[in-house]
Image (cartoon, rainbow, N blue to C red; front, side, top):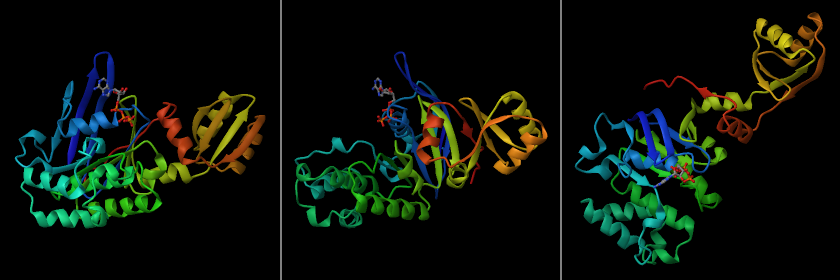
Length: 303
Ligand SMILES: Nc1ncnc2c1ncn2[C@@H]1O[C@H](COP(=O)(O)OP(=O)(O)OP(=O)(O)O)[C@@H](O)[C@H]1O
């Protein structure tokens, strides 16, 4: 379990991470979403003490990460595959890592197999595609069979097979009770694999919800209403159990069927300019949140 408590990171005048309070729980794949530059990597680097917080703190299973004698057994990370020495082969790279962390040589073959790199293990990393480098980064993250797995943009460079493979892998890791955190700037990649979704933008937490809540919000149709007297129409809708959000010239309405909205307008002598059903796309939802139009921070249940 990883807890971020009022976590903030400032670089001179730039606030990269702004007062984050998040808990990442075991047995759960948490998708960490945000546009480029939103603070995902900085947060992940703070979890493994590569970057020091300006204020706030992080606990890893109730301890400071730096206090662990065998840190890669606690957290395995893929943060930047570009840090791998490209003149080494995959086997050599994993060998040096295993010696440094006192890991059995048998495990090198296990992770090579797990990541589909067995047949290219003796080729130099510089001959690898981006997707193969990602696989090697993931092999490195998993070599010490850590309790927590943090993967920063692992889908980058992977083909369709690679994306399916990584989804299965993440599900397997969480089913083993590991805490799995996976970042992406693409909602679709995360929705297919995460149990929980956290969205940040400009360093701030904007959404923290289960995938079921996310699906409910994005898969449920809502009504869009424009009326001559929008204020009055909003009052009528709210009085009758509708949830409304102001949009452009109108209202987004949930909890009331558009036929009911039409009849409520008629009964209350309201003139409607528009009334339509809207099916939001996932990307629209993401953009709405990250542009700060709506907040969806829901209560995070402790497991
Ligand atoms: N070492 C640094 N010095 C100064 N500013 C930094 C540094 N590292 C990150 N930043 C800034 O902090 C903000 C957050 O960056 P971060 O890399 O954490 O975002 P991100 O969500 O991971 O984005 P990306 O997906 O593009 O990597 C950005 O504005 C970035 O320019």
